[in-house]
Every structure is written in structure tokens, then in C-alpha cells.
Length: 353
Image 1 (cartoon, one colour):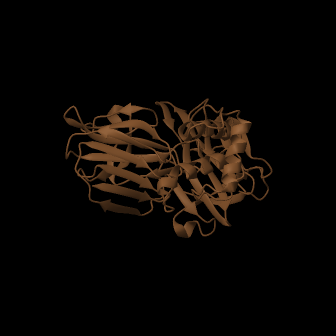
Image 2: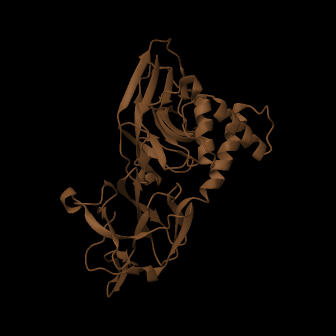
Image 3: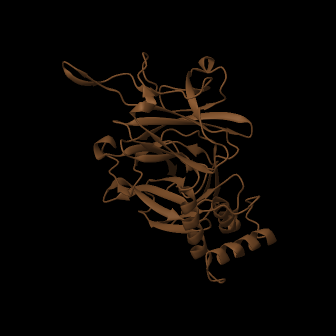
């Protein structure tokens, strides 16, 4: 049995992500103990899988698959199997995920877990994996634009766009414009004209990753504790605010991974507030980012992780309102460093979890 999995690309926070429909297509095929996972999307995918290892279900990750590539997993015949996929961070616009509804352990770094134990006790997070029919010998990840055999070309188009080359459409068609742009990329990077697709995709991914350091918003935490940040952008005329990203003291994080030009981007942050009392130290209301404008831009935020569409009628939609700081719109990227002086202690309870 072959199953194709379509979960429309959804922006993922380090939190929850908006889910879209999953479409399953099955064609009959011979049962096999080897499980083939194929990538027919335009993204490089990171895969985490879970199946019977050593007599118990064991989630494990990560393996990468290039667009148009398949990998094989040797699994026990007719045993339970689960998979979770997300786009590689080299791509602009945030992480997309292909998920299901089975909660299993996961980590941002390479990991092996035991499904019979609590994820928290293993210092791991929980993610919802997709359950795969054990009789299916092949699982294929696709997008709404089903590229099929043209996935490798679509992947090159996306990576060229992520690297700053002019690509007007990601369609998987190897037309004259795409071929000229690929030739230009090879020349710019002094690559062999006859380089294979896999090596070419790897070179493009390396260039796209380097460009990530030049675009979007990077927030660095030079305060005395943890901070939580949120961003607001306008895409195609629609405002959207999202949060929270946690940034440890002394670390930096990129909550926005696309060019700032044309986004009217804003950001907001909360800081940990540790109060010293007679009984010791305890957490007080979060400190809030100070406004820098006489009339600050206001956007919707929530107590917990959130993704809010629009900036009007926040209270009616169950959100609070926060004063965001604007980001420059004439540059591709910027680094913002926040210190204790950027925050003020409010009277109300902080808005994040």
C-alpha cells in the first residue's frame, strides 16, 4: 500500500501551529517490511519516525530528505509506525510542519526516546505524529501543488528564491528562466556545470542558510533573565501577530526569517521578573517592553502561545492588547539586543506561558 500525505504548509511557532487538512491517497501495493518515506514537496524535510525498536515504540530523529528524494526505514512487518515532518530552517518564512494527532516525544536536536516514558522525564517536548497504516509500504509527503516527479526542480526553485535569486513562481517546471537562474547560481558559486541534482540542492541549501543570517529579525537577550518575544507582520494586507518565542539569558533567536522589506514588521517582548522576598525569590508579573513611540502600534497578544489574525477588536476575540515596537522597512534584516533598561514592571499579570 502507498499513502500520500498532504498537509498544507503551515507556519510553526516554537509553540503551536495552525493546522490545515490532511488528505490521504492510497494505492494497492505489496506488503513489505521496509518502509519508504518520500519527499515530493519543494522543501527539504526533517523527519522524525517512531516504530518498534527493541520491543517498544521508540521515536527517533532527525533524518533529512531532499525534494524528490526517498529514504528507507527497516521496520517490523505490520507493526505500528508514526512520522512527523517539518521543513528545514534554511527556508524563509518559518517552519512548515506535516503532523497528525498522536502525541509522542521529540526534540529540536537529534534524539531517541522511549514512548512508554513521559517526555518531560526524558527532557523532551511533545509533538503530534501522524499514524501510518502498517500495511502501507510507502509514505509520501506532498503540498497542495503536487509536484510529483518535478519535486526536485520545485525544490531548486524554492532554494534559489531563499538564496535571494529572482524566482517568480515555484511550479516545478524546468523552463528557460529556471534553467538560466540555475546556471547563474552555478557560475556564482563556481560549481561544475554537470553537478548532480543532490549535490546542487545541498549547495543551494548552504547558500540559503548563509542568507538567513542577513534577513528577518534576530532578538538577543542581554537582560538578567529569560525573555519572551512576539512579532507582528502584514502580508497581502492582513495583519498577523504571533508569539511566544523563549530566549534564554545571553542567547539570540530569530522569530522572523524573511526580509523586512514590505512587511511593516513590529515586535514585542516580556522579561522574567524575579522578586526577592523575606522567604526567598519568587516570580513576579512579567516586565513589559517599553514603548518608544508617542502613539505605539497595538496588536493582539494572549496569555499563552498564540497566532492572532488582525489587530482590531482584540478583546472581543479573547486577546489582550500590547504596544509593539516598529522595525525598519528599508532593510532585509536587523538584530535587536534587549537589556533590562528596555523593560518596565507592570501592575497586571504577565502575558505568556
